[in-house]
Length: 318
Image (cartoon, rainbow, N blue to C red):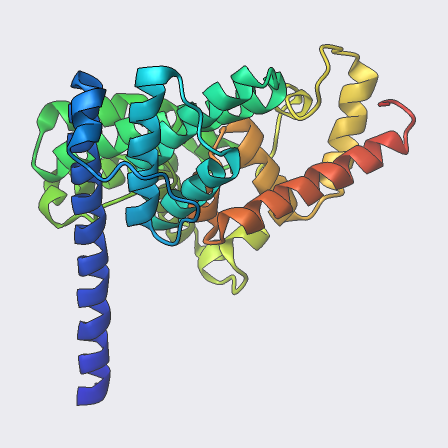
């Protein structure tokens, strides 16, 4: 490798490490400030510049805006400008500042509740639940990196069965699945000190298992298409019915769904499977598919719309 290439690679590694360190420092700062704020919001505001901002350009400004808004909310039930709150969520999401995302989403849910907008309130709460689950996984993963056996056992028990069921849907035999799962978890346990820091543990585990299963298959190794184009996941009746807001279990409707589902591309089927059956958050789905969250939303939206269109053509759903 040329010296220039090595130098460039070192620069990239340093930039990534610096970015991760900055994120950790920002989240540590935020958590410390939240503790101070919740203990005494009036005292907190007296010690900082509590001027309300009118624009947000970076995570530092967004964090300051959120902290000041929360303190004022605790004191006099203040609600910030919804547009600024939504922009702060966008900034936190882009920077992968998960704790800030969670607090912002919960605050946004309160704002929608005040407006009596139940639909948007529920959406914000659901997103917050996704984030809270990610935080739990990240905390487990952080402890695993430090060699915490209890954290490893908790992660193992939390994900072994869902991962096993997912692999069965790919039509791999049980022994191959068990071997791949055992190898994956053994590597996590033995090589914990060299594992990467993760923002999305769930998608990392699914992707790692998928790669191991494909490596175990001679046919898969000879394929040249991207994973999401040829890995085809069957979906059962219950999973299909989750896509539609209906309690009707009419077998005829289920058959129409199955027929429509098979007319989607593999990528569309997989997007629907991970979003509605495995209940991946948008960020986890983006990590799994190696796409942006916005692109994943578009992909799932188009996939469901196409499926609905196919089913509607059968005259069953209105």
